[in-house]
Amino acid sequence: MNNLGLLPLCLIVLVLAGCYSYRHYLRARALLQSWADANSYRILHAKRRLMMPLGMFFTTSRSQVVYHVAVYDDSLKRIRSGWVRLGTYWTGAMDGDAIEVRWEHEH
Image: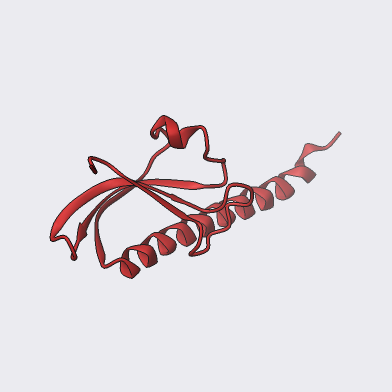
């Protein structure tokens, strides 16, 4: 059996998977930035996290993206940090209604 015929197919699949992942990353970053702009926040730090608070860990699907963020809140004139979950549970669709924020150290 000649496996050289499968090599181009495997390369095409890898390139397509890479393009899809990169597109998903760009959409998530754009949604995060539009959320910040809509709320008058300036993003100081945003890092994708695999480990998150347990309350979010058990309710987050593989297709959703979770960022730990630090933002400057213009309305409060202070820095806030927290967790932002992007995308819907079932499809991971990146739309403006699919954003959940959990602030740290809020009373």
